[in-house]
Image 1 (cartoon, rainbow, N blue to C red):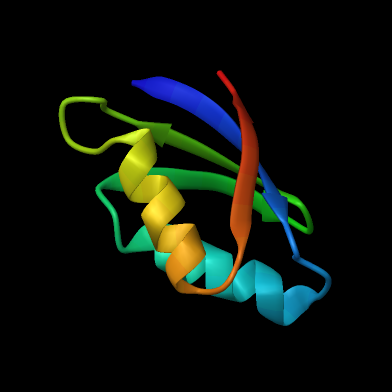
Image 2 (image 1 turned 120 degrees about the vertical axis):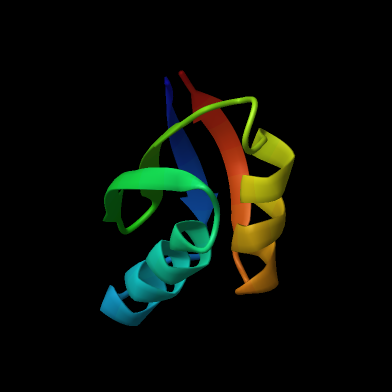
Length: 69
């Protein structure tokens, strides 16, 4: 399993946190923590990709700025 912390732009409230959490939970990964501005996930690169995470977050209106493994 790989751990990655995503820096997310545009999150400003609890509703934003829930939107991002639900978007990421739809992917084959484990959401460890979501706070305003960040999301930490654990995933198997053979099952999902960073591109899939970016797409899921963008689909709910936010942008991933950077990632830290």
